Image 1 (cartoon, one colour):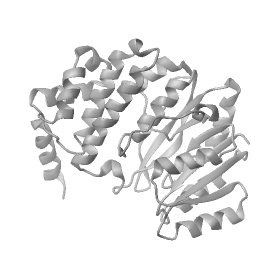
Image 2: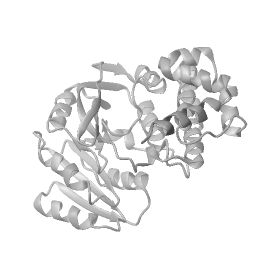
Image 3: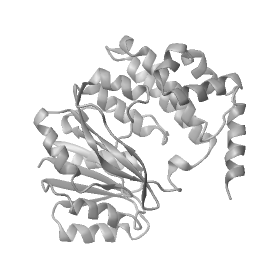
Length: 316
């Protein structure tokens, strides 16, 4: 078995048909799908069992509702593939995705990184392509920390060996949890291989956690940044990436402002800026992000409220 696809499922009866149909259309057949029903209360389990009864490569497991992270952990334990990838139940794969991934396995990669399509209301609104063929893990990690490459768990394929041993996990953090795990996997890797074609289709849903605004989610975003910083500070290559860590923290702060404006006096905000607001770090991140963060700094966060008012005014 070459590739195990792990799909956490919680109340996804409206989306799972399209997700699993995209697997059945794959031109590469040596795969298994591990479906972890996370205590769904709708018709999800019945649908999963229906697919499993028609294709032996689809395997269904059920747990009490414990969240996506635990569901993924259970899937990893059940997986028998040499490589593992994650697929959200409301997303899909391009029909040639697994074949292109299989073609890259000859390089013995630790992680394969692909591009993606962002889809809204059935239409591709953004395409992200990977521009590199091979990278050493430190070079790739620097790019991830600076926002050049995404830190999502999905859209990548991992050698199963990377999951051997305990992965550190922050408690009570939902936003940024993928980045926490992904950066640890990159830190454990050596060979990163890029796949130029966009293989993963992110289906943008308005009710997803990434679109929910709350002070709690904003705080969790900052806590995730500090958790990653602490983890990387314990690695042997820490001094090679100190500036990139500061860049990452600034990017996480920028992301947090779209959840809520915590205010300049908030302890987490002040701590982050005191430690990481540096010219070298700003120079590392995308220019528009750097400009936005400088505005946040110079206006003590008031620009967030101005932007929110502008966006609210534009809505019908």
